Amino acid sequence: AQKITQTQPGMFVQEKEAVTLDCTYDTSDPSYGLFWYKQPSSGEMIFLIYQGSYDQQNATEGRYSLNFQKARKSANLVISASQLGDSAMYFCAMRGVLSGYALNFGKGTSLLVTP
Amino acid sequence: KAGVTQTPRYLIKTRGQQVTLSCSPISGHRSVSWYQQTPGQGLQFLFEYFSETQRNKGNFPGRFSGRQFSNSRSEMNVSTLELGDSALYLCASSPRAGGPGETQYFGPGTRLLVL
Image 1 (cartoon, rainbow over the protein chains, first blue to last red):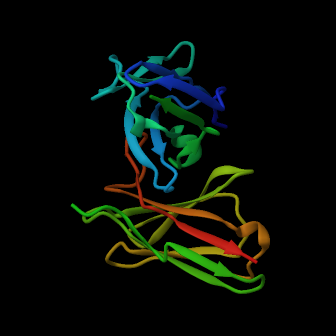
Image 2 (cartoon, helix red, strand yellow):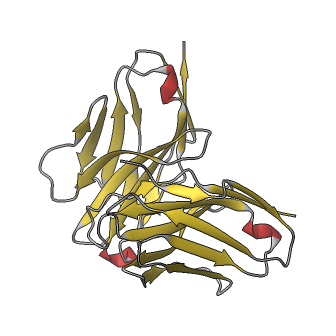
């Protein structure tokens, strides 16, 4: 079975600061994908970043980077230069053959960016 | 390119009724997945359709069903509604099915309230 754990229910960060959102996972899949999504209060899930389990380099997308440590089974999201619009729920998710490639989500972390 | 669209955005139903939700994927995307999001259970996978065939199904009762049309549009149906079916129903599309690296792009969701 696959399991995604996000241990931080809520986080605060000041505008323009960097913040790290934690994600650990457990799987016996030989090949899997890790994703981060942002969900504002409107409800839509917005794709942020993807990391493949065999990717040698950490993924980056603009202000988002993924700190992937395969041996520790962690895939933390780093947001640099936080903006007020970054306030939202953030979900870590995984897909692999064991789930039939369905996305398996963590419980999420609520991020509040303050002025 | 237009994103994933879902209709209706909001629904209020009473127990015992049935409901049909609709999802139009991003143009060119042939895989459509459905997820249920509730405060208690978080995000849970319902099913995935590709080329009009159900590829994968989550752990939901038979009251939950879906289908996909030749233009890749998808509908999901919930019969004999229960109070616990109140949730945000999210549809996601991807170009292809399967594979750990396929990114799913989500629609704005349909908020269903069962009274």
